[in-house]
Amino acid sequence: MFIIKHKKIFIGLSIALVALSLVSLFVFGLDVGIDFKGGALTEVAYKNARPSQEVLNPSLEALNLGNVSLQPTGGLGYIVKTRDLSDSEHTLLLNALSGGQKDVLTETSFNSIGPSVGRELTRKAILAIILISFAIICFIAFAFRKVSKPVSSWKYGIIAIISLLHDVIIPVGIFTVLSHYYGAELNTLFVVAVLTILGLSVSDTIVIFDRIRENIRGYTANSQMNFSQIVGLSLEQSFVRSISTSLTVILVLLALFFFGPLSTKYFALMLTAGMFFGTYSSIFLASPLLVLVEEWQRKK
Image 1 (tube, helix red, strand yellow):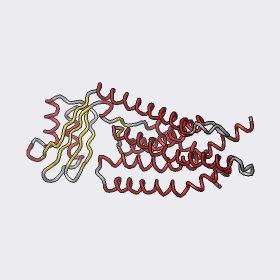
Image 2: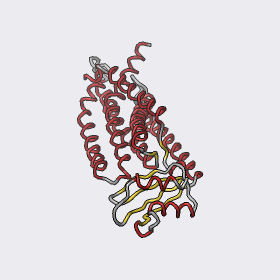
Image 3: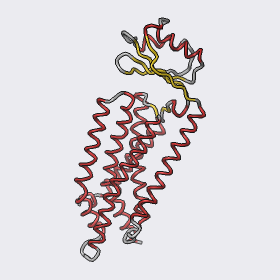
Image 4: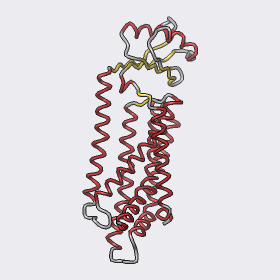
């Protein structure tokens, strides 16, 4: 199959995309939301016309609350993100948003998260990602425990994790650009998106690996087929199924992005990117890496 024939091109493309994403991450960084750094989130809805941000900004700056993020929501509302507020500061914020006329708006929600809660969420999020990655390696190594030749079962697990890192790092790189230019914030939905990408991506990789395993058993006696040919055959058998399944999910996620609420737009975009690159890595990265490892072992 042409994928195996040109495997170094596809692997090189993946390396380039990962490198660009890491550069973007270090250059732009991520704008951490109040879920992790602590702060207050106030949502208000105006009864009539919503004033423009240019009109509200001078009043908000006069409060000396530090960095205040004003994000439109719906047709008449704003989401205001600030540092943690005292009761008096909260009242002053509402006065600034209403121009001193309390009957012009309604506060629909107010959430305050302390720094200690943010640190705890950060710790749990990192721990969840590490544990899931470890569980994936163990599962794949167990599932492929009877596959010892020509590539050991634990190497399937390592290659799957490499593919998963690829699937997560590239969407994170995209998110850093969105964070820098459009104010997207890293919140709990971001972590949910990462964990979902890990689950969806590894399932596609395992399906292709399982097809390779079955073909190895079936074609072992056929000396005319080497390992790279078996992997190529497995990809031909799985290619249409993998793309069709992923495309169905991507179409749903795009519908959520374009027609869903503002609060889930970046979540949907992250999942869309994760599904796209997850499908790419399962076909164009993980399987070629298996062939590359087998070739390297033969040359030793």
